[in-house]
Length: 129
Image (cartoon, rainbow, N blue to C red):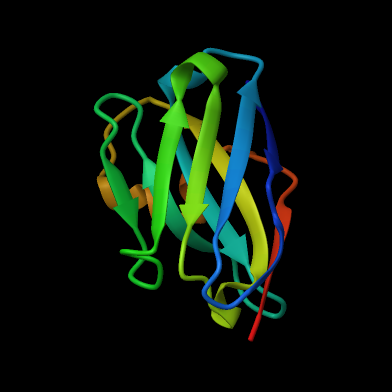
Protein backbone atom coordinates (compact mmCIF):
# COMPACT_ATOMS: atom_id res chain seq x y z
CA UNK A 1 0.00 0.00 0.00
CA UNK A 2 1.07 3.58 -0.53
CA UNK A 3 0.94 6.85 1.33
CA UNK A 4 0.23 10.08 -0.52
CA UNK A 5 1.08 13.59 0.66
CA UNK A 6 0.01 16.64 -1.32
CA UNK A 7 1.51 20.12 -1.15
CA UNK A 8 1.64 23.31 -3.16
CA UNK A 9 -1.82 24.67 -2.56
CA UNK A 10 -2.44 28.28 -1.66
CA UNK A 11 -4.23 31.47 -2.59
CA UNK A 12 -3.85 33.07 -5.99
CA UNK A 13 -5.64 35.66 -8.07
CA UNK A 14 -7.60 34.74 -11.14
CA UNK A 15 -5.33 34.17 -14.11
CA UNK A 16 -2.50 32.96 -11.91
CA UNK A 17 -0.78 29.58 -11.66
CA UNK A 18 0.02 26.97 -9.03
CA UNK A 19 1.82 23.66 -9.11
CA UNK A 20 0.64 20.90 -6.82
CA UNK A 21 2.88 18.02 -5.78
CA UNK A 22 2.01 14.57 -4.48
CA UNK A 23 4.77 12.49 -2.94
CA UNK A 24 4.10 8.76 -3.05
CA UNK A 25 5.78 6.36 -0.60
CA UNK A 26 5.44 2.88 0.81
CA UNK A 27 5.47 0.80 -2.37
CA UNK A 28 6.66 0.84 -5.97
CA UNK A 29 4.71 3.94 -6.89
CA UNK A 30 5.64 3.71 -10.56
CA UNK A 31 3.29 0.75 -10.87
CA UNK A 32 0.29 2.70 -9.62
CA UNK A 33 -2.30 4.51 -11.67
CA UNK A 34 -2.52 8.09 -10.42
CA UNK A 35 -5.06 10.86 -10.44
CA UNK A 36 -5.91 14.33 -9.20
CA UNK A 37 -9.35 15.13 -7.84
CA UNK A 38 -10.94 18.17 -6.27
CA UNK A 39 -13.86 18.91 -4.02
CA UNK A 40 -15.45 22.31 -3.65
CA UNK A 41 -17.69 23.17 -0.66
CA UNK A 42 -21.10 21.56 -1.03
CA UNK A 43 -20.10 19.62 -4.13
CA UNK A 44 -19.08 16.06 -4.87
CA UNK A 45 -15.47 15.14 -5.43
CA UNK A 46 -14.65 15.24 -9.12
CA UNK A 47 -11.84 13.93 -11.27
CA UNK A 48 -9.51 16.55 -12.70
CA UNK A 49 -6.66 14.63 -14.34
CA UNK A 50 -5.26 11.12 -14.47
CA UNK A 51 -2.12 9.38 -15.66
CA UNK A 52 -1.67 5.70 -16.37
CA UNK A 53 1.46 3.90 -15.20
CA UNK A 54 2.38 1.81 -18.26
CA UNK A 55 2.61 4.38 -21.07
CA UNK A 56 1.96 7.66 -19.31
CA UNK A 57 -1.28 8.34 -21.14
CA UNK A 58 -3.25 11.16 -19.58
CA UNK A 59 -6.86 12.28 -19.36
CA UNK A 60 -8.41 15.55 -18.23
CA UNK A 61 -11.84 16.73 -17.32
CA UNK A 62 -13.39 19.17 -19.78
CA UNK A 63 -13.31 21.93 -17.18
CA UNK A 64 -9.49 21.94 -16.95
CA UNK A 65 -8.40 20.67 -20.36
CA UNK A 66 -5.87 23.03 -21.90
CA UNK A 67 -5.15 24.73 -18.56
CA UNK A 68 -3.92 21.94 -16.28
CA UNK A 69 -1.11 19.46 -16.92
CA UNK A 70 -0.46 16.26 -15.01
CA UNK A 71 3.07 14.88 -14.93
CA UNK A 72 5.32 12.76 -12.78
CA UNK A 73 8.94 12.40 -11.78
CA UNK A 74 9.48 8.69 -11.29
CA UNK A 75 12.88 9.16 -9.63
CA UNK A 76 11.28 11.39 -6.99
CA UNK A 77 8.07 9.33 -6.70
CA UNK A 78 6.20 12.56 -7.19
CA UNK A 79 3.09 13.40 -9.18
CA UNK A 80 2.47 17.00 -10.23
CA UNK A 81 -0.46 19.09 -11.35
CA UNK A 82 0.48 22.32 -13.09
CA UNK A 83 -2.51 24.64 -13.01
CA UNK A 84 -2.54 27.70 -15.27
CA UNK A 85 -5.13 30.39 -15.98
CA UNK A 86 -6.86 29.65 -12.71
CA UNK A 87 -10.33 31.01 -12.11
CA UNK A 88 -12.54 31.18 -9.00
CA UNK A 89 -14.38 28.01 -10.09
CA UNK A 90 -11.13 26.11 -9.51
CA UNK A 91 -11.33 26.82 -5.78
CA UNK A 92 -11.41 23.49 -3.96
CA UNK A 93 -9.46 21.00 -1.92
CA UNK A 94 -7.28 19.04 -4.30
CA UNK A 95 -6.55 15.37 -3.65
CA UNK A 96 -4.04 12.95 -5.07
CA UNK A 97 -5.18 9.34 -5.56
CA UNK A 98 -3.55 6.04 -6.46
CA UNK A 99 -4.51 2.52 -7.45
CA UNK A 100 -2.23 -0.42 -8.04
CA UNK A 101 -2.33 -1.37 -11.70
CA UNK A 102 -4.41 -4.53 -11.94
CA UNK A 103 -7.02 -5.91 -14.29
CA UNK A 104 -8.73 -4.33 -17.23
CA UNK A 105 -9.90 -0.73 -17.14
CA UNK A 106 -10.39 2.19 -19.48
CA UNK A 107 -8.65 5.53 -19.41
CA UNK A 108 -11.75 7.41 -18.27
CA UNK A 109 -11.65 5.33 -15.07
CA UNK A 110 -8.86 7.66 -13.96
CA UNK A 111 -11.48 10.39 -13.43
CA UNK A 112 -13.73 8.21 -11.28
CA UNK A 113 -13.41 8.35 -7.49
CA UNK A 114 -14.47 4.71 -7.03
CA UNK A 115 -11.53 3.53 -9.16
CA UNK A 116 -8.91 4.60 -6.62
CA UNK A 117 -7.96 2.88 -3.38
CA UNK A 118 -5.54 5.36 -1.81
CA UNK A 119 -5.98 9.05 -1.13
CA UNK A 120 -3.93 11.90 0.24
CA UNK A 121 -5.16 14.37 2.83
CA UNK A 122 -5.70 17.17 0.31
CA UNK A 123 -4.37 20.66 -0.24
CA UNK A 124 -6.48 23.81 -0.43
CA UNK A 125 -6.49 25.94 -3.56
CA UNK A 126 -8.27 29.30 -3.39
CA UNK A 127 -8.63 31.54 -6.44
CA UNK A 128 -9.89 35.07 -5.95
CA UNK A 129 -11.41 37.26 -8.63
